[in-house]
Image (cartoon, rainbow, N blue to C red; front, side):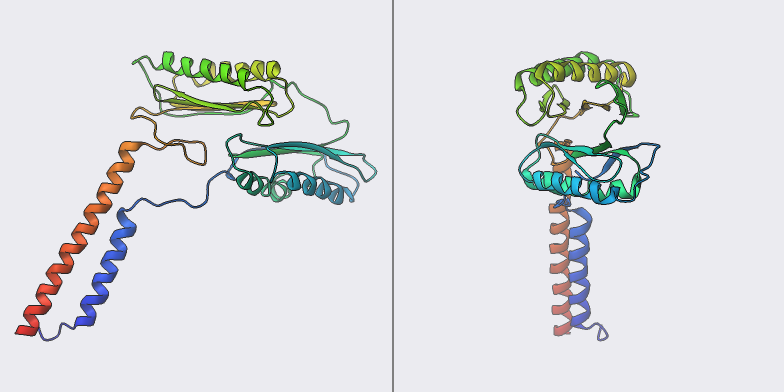
Length: 294
């Protein structure tokens, strides 16, 4: 064993401990996924006046300046031969001011990349959305569906529909009672492992918000059926839900939930890995001692 050097064991052991830690310990996310793109909508028409970029940039600057202190803000920017541009942003009601700002800050760049120089556009991220449109742009119903997605997994039996619908009803009532609090009537709740949230555009009245969310819920019931999760975005509101068969733990910054059992299993695995590394250390130290004695 004369060819075995102590430095070799030291480096190998250090590498083992590091790799074991990365392999088994849960990763703590320092950045949320609030800025992940959900969908985008861009008009077919484009600006004919090249000065629109300055007007649009002034609009975005005004919106961004408000996003560190408000969850909703609406304004207009004038300039160019094509008239004013109106726009707004809305952050999810449970975001901090800092998270709201960081989310809204992503929208101008995405508008440029995804919509180019169109006369109207909407960018929906996980934690916020922003929209802009030139004056006179055709308006749509507040109940018009813009985007929906349903989970591929299906739940059958076990009273899932009853639990889901009870969670929906609780959320609808919460929306109505929350009123216009500059969070757009945001409300999130859970019922027997079904987590649900809803939110309206910040300038909707409580009654209109309730009607909009109710329409979104009906879309989810009909079009997602027994899907384990779903998201429905209407022009003036949205809702989402998710079913967690093994229970709901603390809420993450992205508005989703983590499974407690899985998290505990990962942590236990991490502890076991450290124990294994410790045993290896003792074994290697024993080998080194025997080599020195030899």
